[in-house]
Every structure is written in structure tokens, then in C-alpha cells.
Length: 426
Image 1 (cartoon, rainbow, N blue to C red):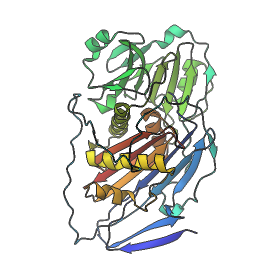
Image 2: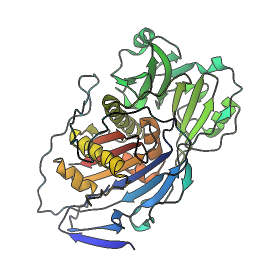
Image 3: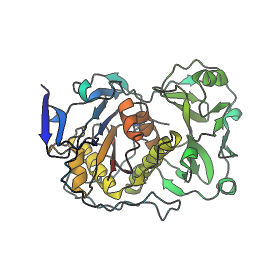
Image 4: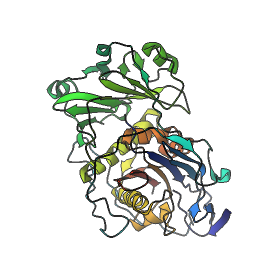
């Protein structure tokens, strides 16, 4: 039975390729009020925060939940200061490296020996793990998995080679020397869980571009740039346009997957909003899964940060600065969930996101948390959040100024991959 608790004089916290067999996501947000009344409430269910849009998504099973919390600040309580790293610069050296040691005997320890990532499979929807709580939810919609609507192609392969983006044309198989002449040096080069590196062009979040580079040649890309064009499909194209250009009959979904002999193309759509194309993700069928080294896991965190700011920029919301402290808090929670086999904003010790953030020295006026498990890639995980109203609310909350992201891969855990986002405003 759910119980409603009211606390006074206190702050409250709130909370390609698909990978693994299971995946899940959840959101948690808190908001202060201008009246600063010393009261707050949240719903608790069987020692975990009761959520709305709680949904399990998986090939065999998976989970999703949305939770919104409100809190107010006692006007007599002062906030402590926190050291926050500024928005990552455009050079590799200036980006947060997050070399954060974690206790070896604690649930917050990172996996010592990452192993090859499992071949991704498509999940199905199963029942929710907990009873939704409409009274604290912005929306009771179900977060659907990133689907894999594969329909074999009859379009000639050569027509799939060119992407127009950032005022230039990028060709699959093009050399890195040619790419650098057109776009300049990348702002960051990220090792990935695949056998290629990403050239990250993130100096303009409205024109974010990841180029997959293998043996000094382009073998794929991701972009949600507002100026991209690929095979007649552009940012903002309708579902009808996609179907017309590819001679298909895709239904409206988060991800439309189209395969050729050489490439797998995923069109990312705003399913719960405009229904239009908001990104494209293409990889050569020759690429292979490698492993999740410590460096790769940190790179996933930075990619989620970039993707989140891209979503905000494209929706005219101010971008956020990177917070190393929030990244530590997020990373510890992701590792804790993986090693202790739970998926919730409240950990087994009863600590809320706000309490976990305070432990890292963060003083906040408002905060939020999104979690996801089993989606694998930074791209599909962030897009999954974007297509859930509760998670999108956190992604686009203009009140938040700082973001930290924590990712872990634990091959023996239920969902394999776990990502936590902690947002806040001081």
C-alpha cells in the first residue's frame, strides 16, 4: 500500500543498435516554490519511490518509470557552495576526464574487466514493476523501446552514401584527411564500445555531428543537426516523406530502421510530439562490438551530455554546464543499481537523489534525475528519454543549469548498461 508522507522544514530530493536483452528508464524531478513554504510530499511504495508511467520494456523484460517530485526550501536555510566545472571547451584537453576513483568493495565500484557487449535484441513490453502514482506524475505515458522496424530495401546501395550536414557533403568511405579539410579538426575523438572512434563535432549544439571513423575512413554517423539531408530526408521531415523516399510503409515509431547490404540506417522521430524526424543514425554492417573499457564508459557519459544539450539547443532551451560532482553522484548510483540488482531513484539504503547529490557537496535549489537501463548506446538511451514525456520534462527544464552523467556496464547484471543523469540549479 502506498503511503503519503509530508515533511516540514526540509529540502526534498527528487530522482544503431540496441544492446542487451533488457532495458528501462525512469525520471525524477524536484522543484522549489517561490513561496518557500516549509512543506513537501512524496509517495513511497514498498521501500521505493512510487512512479508514474512505470513500464517494463524488453525482449524478455525491461522497466520504465517516471516520477515527479516537488520540494520547497526553508527560507532560513543557507546553501553551501559547490565547485562545478564549466561547460566543456571545444578541445580534447579541456573536456572533463572524470578520473574518479571509486571504492573497490562498495556497490559504487566500477566493473574491473569489461567484457564484449552482447548482440542487441529487440525488447517487448511487459507489465510495470510498481503501481503508477498519477498524483505526482506529469504524464502516465509508457516509454516504448527504440523499435527495430526492419524492412529489406530495394533501393540501390550507392544512393545511401552521402550526408549533407554543416554546409558540406560527407561520403561514407571518405578519408579523415578529407573530413578535416571540410569540417576542421573534431572537438573530441572518443573511443567507443565498437571497433571505431567517434569524431565529435559539438561546437554548435544545433548542428551536433558524430562521425564513426575506422581505419581513417567514415563508416557511419549520427546527427540531429537542423540542416542535415540524407536521401531526400531532412531534419523535420514527416513520416510520409520517409516512406515516400524509401518506398516503405513504416508506422509512426521512435526509430525507423532500414537496412541495405552495407548499412543499417535508423531515422529517429519525435513520436510523442511533432511526429517528425529529429535525427539519423547510420553504421556500416561491418562494424563489430568491442568492449567497455573505463575510458569508453567515461566517453558514453560525455556523449549523453552532448546529446542532452543538443536536445535543449534545438528546443531553444539554454544548454547546461558539466558538473563533475553530479557526474560522481550519477556514476555511483548507476554502479549501485547494476551491482545490487535494482532499478529505482531510491537506493537500498533509502537515499534519494537529493541526498546522494548532497553527499558530493552539491547545494541546489532544484534538481532532477533520469535513469535508463539496457538501452546500451548513448544515442538510443537519450532518444528514449526524449520520447517519454516525464523524461523529456527533465531534459528540457530551463531551470536546470548543471548536468552530470554516470554510466556503467556490468555484464552479470540484469540490464547490463545503466545511465543516470543528475540535473540541478544552485
